[in-house]
Image (cartoon, rainbow, N blue to C red; front, side, top):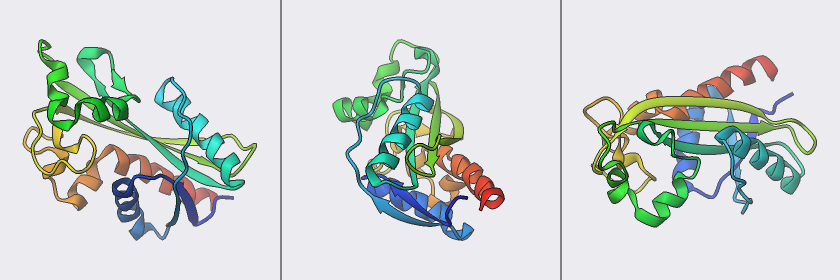
Length: 186
C-alpha cells in the first residue's frame, strides 16, 4: 500500500516547489532527498523506471521520481528525455533556434513520475502531456525551458501564474493521475 507521505527524489528546488504546490490540496505530503542517480539512455518510460529502481535501492524504501521531456514534432520527438543536456549546453534563450529551418514549431511537454514501493518492486508510471510550441524565450528564465514553451498561443509557461500553469501543465496532469492512484491504493 502506498504511503500518504512520498519520498520525492530530486535536487531541483523549482521542481520540488511546483510538485509540493500541486499536491498540497490533496493531503499528500512530500519529503525530499537529492540523489545523484545515473540516467540511462532510452525512452522517457525506460529512463523513469530505471531511475525509480535505482532510487529505491539507494534509499532502501519507497520513492517517487520524475523525468521530464520536451519533444519537438519536427525532430521526431527529440530532444525528448535529453532536454536537460540541451538546456545546459545552449540555454533557454537559444532553444527556439533548434527549430530554425522547420515550419513546424509544435512541441509536447511530457512528465513521467515513477513510484516504487521499494527495492524489488516494479515501478508504477504516471504520465502527463501538454501540447504547445517553441518560441523565443519570454518571461522569467529561472525554471528550465518554461520561458520557451508557449501553451495557448498567448503565454509561455514562464508568463503564466503558477496556479494556472499547474492546472494545465504536463507535471500537473501526471500528478493528477498519481493522486487518483493513491486514492484507490492507500
